[in-house]
Figure 1 (cartoon, one colour):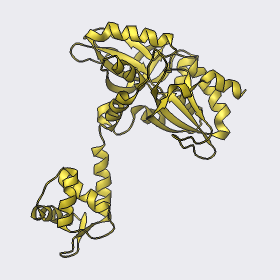
Figure 2 (cartoon, one colour):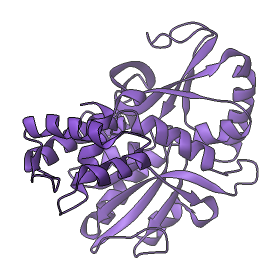
Figure 3 (cartoon, helix red, strand yellow):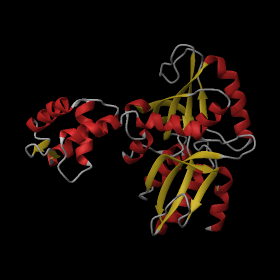
Figure 4 (cartoon, helix red, strand yellow):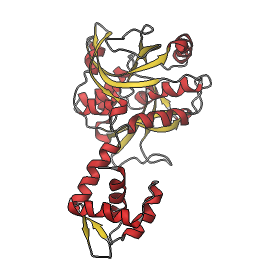
Length: 326
């Protein structure tokens, strides 16, 4: 389905009345498409023949149910690349200062049933003591605030998203390329290989959410036995920035932030994944590992990855939350 026909269907789908070619041509200009009424009628005839629109003489058209379903499918295809665009947008908008620990960092938002909260916190306690989280700071809400709505009989947990690393480096003039989200196999406590990968620029959904829903993780196994499967991502940085990135990462660790599991060698594959020319691969933990562990414990959650920007100073140490519920 080409861009013009898709735009016409979108216009028709927003109305519950018949629309003529003159009005459609006018509205197409808002989509950056300049067509004459005659050309619009040509496209409408194609849509009629496909059963996606229904003609009412000279009055105009309405979209059919088949047309709505076709639009929904086409819109999904149109969203491919949505996640990588979201990563880049939030990285730019974040004003988090790692030195001062001020500003907004990027969070994953998860809703957990109140009845399962104590069990969920107990599970997460193991994860927050491991290298498989970005930070031990979390957002904890039991009721609505001005930014986040908490559903009834649920609590909201916000975990630091690994894209915060992108934001930190960007503020230092370093562009990091997010290539893949994956399931990383851990053996003897060390990264061994990726068992599954999804390209960030080829999906309309966050890869880590997909892997959680697919029950593909074994975060608890990685922590308790040193062998399991955790959420992680593969990213690239320019060779010329390697020393600077390591310097910034050292500051992050001093400030209670972590996340980088491995640095590769310049122009060499990392865990068999090739890198671009004059680049270095790095493996970064997934911010949703605590949530993956909860799901492994048969607690259903509702999660939105790479969800929002939130002020770092409004977050608390996970240990304080645990103490309040013991």
